[in-house]
Length: 322
Image 1 (spheres, rainbow, N blue to C red):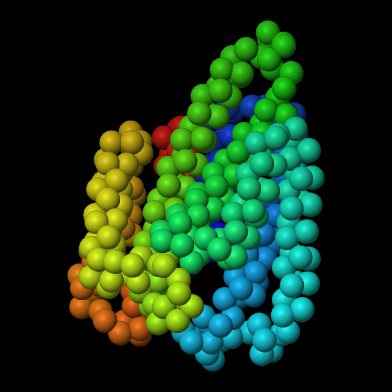
Image 2 (cartoon, rainbow, N blue to C red):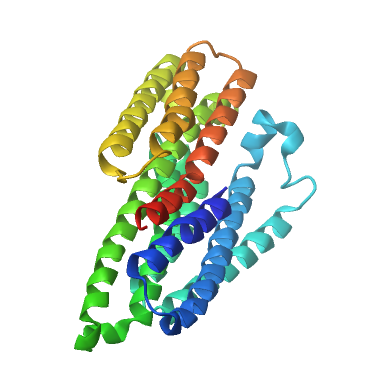
């Protein structure tokens, strides 16, 4: 899902914004190969760190998983703990190394700090934060936001490196103005899309805590359903769903406004409003592990549809530039 979202937002939206928002000459566009190189490094970095996060989470949660999903336990069964440790060391070493290389190529301390920060958050999440009240859920949501925002940061850094001479050459003043405008739009879209991804992730993480509360209770975890009970967790999830739907309505009608727009409102209704309404209604009827698992699957669908929104935004951006 993360690789899909990064790819879609990078090429489906940001590349379109660069190409049509700045309308630079073909001779300058030849250096778009830098965008391809930086995309490959970004994708490999995020995939390696995310995969390492899954491995280290399985490493620390073996006993919980043996209670919640005994047929799906890998560490200690098909793979030894020593093998798992080597896997996440290799994945994180590769991911962080590629991330540092990318930040050096872009001359961007921000990019490097985000990459190292996400890896650090995932480590502490698996080792301790996951067992603390709400902290683990918020950390995962933050990591998702940073991973999405990082795509925008890399595009902007690529642009600034590529056109660094514009700041000193007055003949490019007009293009430099366009670049600054597009940079602001890229950061705005990255923050907005990242925020929705983070909120939907938070919703799903708490839902999964409802599903896994038996094993979490055995290991004395202080997740929200254990501390506040099933009913308290459902009220939090209902409120969070309402916040996401209201925020989506505001963004669709008052922020993501294109003069010609035949997609945003439709995607909001069928990709966010209806699925979350159904989720909230089914939530209060759910009590069994299987039922919470089905709710988690419904949220996956919602996250997938919203991950594809940058394609629609890129199309609308292109459409409105003509």
